[in-house]
Length: 324
Picture 1 (cartoon, rainbow, N blue to C red):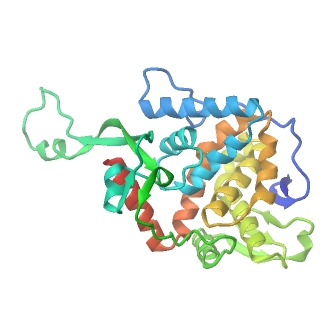
Picture 2 (picture 1 turned 30 degrees about the vertical axis):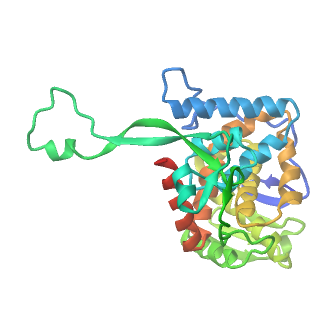
């Protein structure tokens, strides 16, 4: 199913946005629109390369690459945006990555001949010039700070063998479980009111800005994805961003967020989300401008609805990968 917008609200129904819609030119913090130069930091160069590769693949009709990028956002939402794109580009089928040391501690080893996946790890140190003299600010100068990035290598679980790994709690295959309760709690924390009303039919959900209205009678999985879509509108499409984006941009971003979060919690969102994603064929630039926004929003929602144990495991694996 696809989404459209009605006046000042966003609604979910059966009408796809017209493909001729295009984004209005505007500047943002997104690296896609600020196209980096060779002198920029290596992470932004990597992001640019990954996005350019995605655009090339989409222009060749290979829409599965887009699905791989969004799936990587679901699998590795605690990783930085740049590292997510690097993993997806090098190993689209990756599901769980870690450095060699981390795999060894888990009783597994990397298979002979396997090629590592490059990601960036932060370099933490002390940055002082020769002119810096000890004084009352010495303590401030000696504080660790980010001084750059370095390339490290991680490996997907499929590239390893050894002891069986425990399943993460979020791999639940088709049921929303307690994620719905956590999502409702998160919506309340954002000061957003939730209502049910049959009058919005045939729309499944509408975002009014501070209020979400859902059509009653949906299955739990369908209601969950509808709620994700409308929450994305609430989080993303207010004030200036709503004015400077088109209906197509807003709907693709909201649906991509629903896809990423749904995928992460084990829902099969293929029918509702993958069909809509096909609209990016011929409109690759729209996705390029929105990917980072989609990732940040989906990550914020997933952080809020993940069980504490799963979140801790994800963060530990990321930290181990970065020091590998």
